[in-house]
Length: 120
Image 1 (cartoon, rainbow, N blue to C red):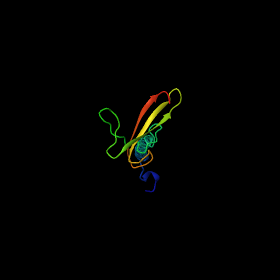
Image 2: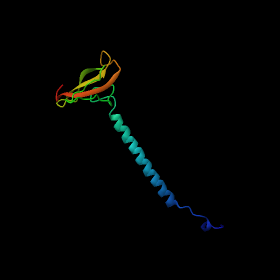
Image 3: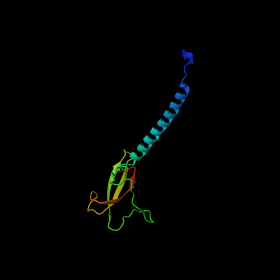
Image 4: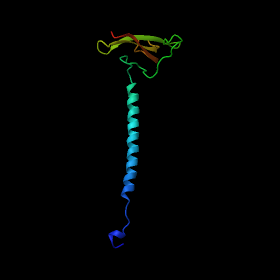
């Protein structure tokens, strides 16, 4: 191995190809994790303007499609408005709690529905 031509050659194309495959996989993984984080973040403490304690845990509905609470809990309800005129909506927000008010716990589940569309 006295000459440069006698030295073993590295296969840069193979290495670059391998790195590009790893890079594409890593970018795809990061993009998927970011999209998942955004999706879960979008569900956080607000359902519209309600600021529910348990936005991911909705109360059950009866046959009439009305929310209900389990025994020992009562539904505490408040309203809020969201949007700009003429597309404002008034929402009813509710939570099943054992407390005397909305802010008292423990909270079992949350609920929300539109009271009036296009006005508050």
